[in-house]
Amino acid sequence: MPHPQQLPNWTMPATPQGYDEPVAVMDAENSSSWRPDFVAWERAGFWESTGFASQDTDVPRNALPAWPWRDGFVPTPKDWQSIGFLPFV
Image (cartoon, rainbow, N blue to C red; front, side, top):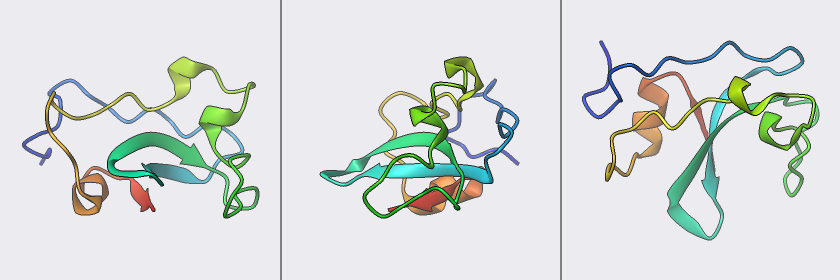
């Protein structure tokens, strides 16, 4: 069952080759700001972004997850988990 605040036609894109799973990355300076992405855990470091598909020039932008939520909704980690993302805080 979809989340009640999820956009009705939103679907999760396929995980790009070389990446492990979808993550929702919380902005370190604004805990209500998130970015849907994919992660390669082997390349992801605490202060590095090289493990994220959004930082990989070989991953087309249209292969990244689109924002899945209705305008004005501020998701929590639990909301992200409910639609298949691992919250990365």
